[in-house]
Structure formats: structure tokens, C-alpha cells
Image 1 (cartoon, rainbow, N blue to C red):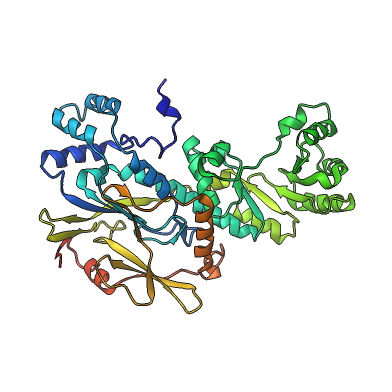
Image 2: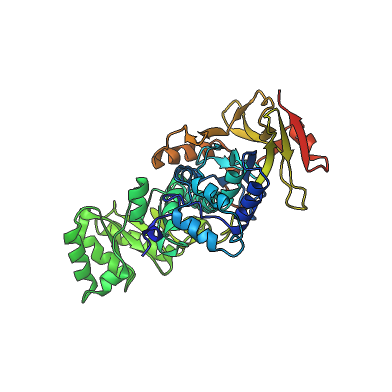
Length: 462
């Protein structure tokens, strides 16, 4: 069995994470003698999803790890030679692929940043074949993780300061999605995850207690509770809705101060949580928490709290790891410039298709803040033009000449950064019901370039 099957995306760096058309284009560039041309591509999101007003950018670390090990293995090359559409290509093209490594530059928003449509989340500057071959992998890594992070930020906001735990591994679209998705959720504000692999891999706190199957494996609920309490006397949290929820709550009070809390996973959570809270308080377990789970999302959590449910923490799985209401982000990766062979000029490229327009040229994003430090608007500029004096640049360089120049931050640092960045925006941005739209504009120079009907603009370097 091929051991690579168990390796999660972003670890083994296989350049075979491509769609076939990237390889056919690569072959075309190679045979046309264009393999050394320097191209600029940008990954961005064209528009806001119907129920989103911002995005939390996530996936950069996965991209950087992937690039560090990016290559075609001998088995990959053997396979490609057998693909009918490629089988006629000369051996020297496959020899070229066998030796390819990433030698370009990567510019990006810091991971955990609040971002908006048309802003370049990642810019790749590299020989054109390298840059083209990265399209599928970069989109897969960024689209999924940004989707999960954005959903998680909304859930955490709805919880209004209460703990949110990521529970989604068993409903994720694969083990890689489960692990990287758990990391994205924690960056966006979740306290921890149930996923032990993600805990080890990314240094996340992991939590978990018992399932209904544990209770059902014993002759009665009290015996199940007793055995578990003996095994885990510290931090005891009991699942009490396997049979009769209120009876389960009464049984739980026997453990007194050892009882950290109880979990509700079904039924009328509002009514049950109120009754359970009274039972716990009357039984001397005033400090015991009520933890709720079971197909929760930001809307259901907001409804529970609005109804006065005395819930202290939430476990959210399917709805968050799949972003069930808006499961696909639609980020795109587009060519925006090609440099002259002599390095003296650059041709800015743009797409003009209706509803699929792109912005030409390498770009920077400036974020304007008022005197109170609140973000009040973004401006997208060409990378070589002067930024407005009241704007701070958001896009940083992470890779230079194929070498990573910024170290990875621990997840808890990225989590703090994401929380700090989101806190700088008007509170209306986080309100799921408010129509507030954050202003993003183009610089005058960039706006002028986009008004024409030309697909290519040639600019001489200074």
C-alpha cells in the first residue's frame, strides 16, 4: 500500500495535486521556449457570499509548507507519461518536471486577517510553469480553510463570549479537511477541537468526554456515570440526555464539586437547559457548566441565547467544518502580469469576461483606520504606486527566491491576531442581520487601468 495515502495535504508536497489543464499549459509553455518567463498570479475572491460580509483568510501556512516540499516524484513522472493527453510529449519535458522546485516569491495577507472581495490574498511571482502548476493546490488549501474560518468566526460571535469547541472531524470531507479545518476554526476563535490529530499537528487544545454508546453499554445510567467518574475524577463532564435528561441531571449532582458540567445533545435545549440549571443549582453544583451540542450553527446559538437558555459552552461540528449554509467559497487564481525577458518592463494582464473581471498588475492593499484605531475602509493599489498616507500596507512577503523568509507562528498567536484584527472593525460587520457593508475601493491609477477594454497594458519599469 502506498504510504502517501495517509499523508495529509500540505505535508508531502506532491506537485501532482494539479488539474490536467495545468500540465497541458505547462507543456505548451515549455515547448514554446517560455519556461523562464516570470509571471504574476493572484488568488482572490470575486464577491461576498449571500450570508457573508467579510472573510477570515486562512490556509497560508498549508500553502507555505506545501511549497517547501513541492516536487514530482519518480512515480508521478511515470504516471504522467502514461496519461493519454501527455504521452506524446518529449522526454525532456518530463525531465524538466522531475527537477522542478519552487523558486519564486510569495506575497500574502497574514493568516487570520479580515479580507474582502477582489483583494489579493496570495500573489505568486515565479517562472510561468511553476506559477501555473500551483493553481489547484493553492485554491484547494485556501478556499476550504477560509470558508471554515469565516463560518467559525460567525459562530464564535453568536456565542457572545461563551466557549465554542470544534466538533467536526467525522463530518468533514476527508481527514485532511478535518485537521486543517480544525486549525482554521481555532484561529477564528474556537477554544479547542475534538480532533486529536489536529491537536498534535497544530498544538491545539483537545477536549472530549463520552458518547451515548458509553451510557448504553452499561445496565443503567448511574453505573455508567460512576465508572466514568472513577476513571476521570478531574474535570468530570457527563452526557445526560441518553434516556431521561432531567433524571440524568439529578444523578450528576451526586458528584458535587467534582462535576465540571453536563452536556445536552438533543431535545428542547431551551427548556431543558433551564430545568437542568435549576437541578444543578439546587443540588449544590452551582459551578457546573451546561454544554450544548447537536447540529448547532450561529443562527441556532443566537436563538438559544435570545430565549434565555443558560448555556455556558457550545460544541459545533457539521455546520462549521462544512460551512453548511455556504459550503463553497469560489476563490480564483488569475494571471495578472508577465515580465519582459530583459526585466525592463511588465505587461499587466486582466480578464474582461462578464461577471469574471480581474484587476491587472501586482497589487497591495492599504487599510485605513480612524483616530480610534477602527478600520474604516480598504484601498487596492498597484504594488509600485504610493499608498495613501492614512493607510497601512497589509500584504507581506513570505517567500523570496523559493526560500521562506518568515517563520510559522503557533496557532494560538494566529488566533490572537485574528481576534485583534476583527475587533478593529465596526461591530455591524459581525452582526448577521445588519446590512452594513465595509467600503473597499480602487486607487485612482488602478481604477483608470480597469476602465479600458484592453486585456494587456505594457508598463516600463523605472
